[in-house]
Image (cartoon, rainbow, N blue to C red; front, top):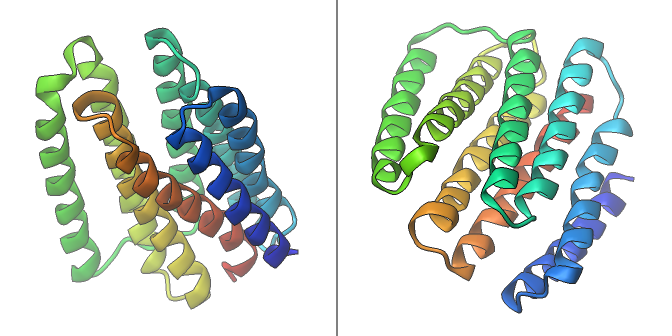
Length: 217
């Protein structure tokens, strides 16, 4: 089943990028919605050794699905709603990760400082372009930074399966990096290259998090 979902996702992603390149929005939104539904399906078909982790993670995936739909629609107000949906999704991921995390060791704290410094640079890079979006974007940067730090804490829990920990950390990192391209597209320099790089990173991240449900123990 996992292989079927991955193959379907790759095909749909190729179509989404194809229609994005040609600015055919009529096809873009339905295809992107179905593609995002697949990462929720991927989580639902996994074994659930940790029910609380599964519950919060699926909640986060659901809010991300809502964000995907909203960000594909035109308008500043809809963009704010989409940003809010993703912010709540990140907070749900934080709650999922905190329940199974073990924040300890020099590597964790060093990586945490690295994430905070990187996020500060990201916000400084974006700030001149934000205008009235400064507050919402600052809150979002804080949320996604917390999500990545919480994923680092999961990676440090030796009581969890190595494959599951790797999926959580790599999934969170891909999500973090994908948002840099979303921000560049929205605020700095719109270009198809942002989608070409950002969308694969985003979906790789989401599917890794979805598959981690069954691999965490």
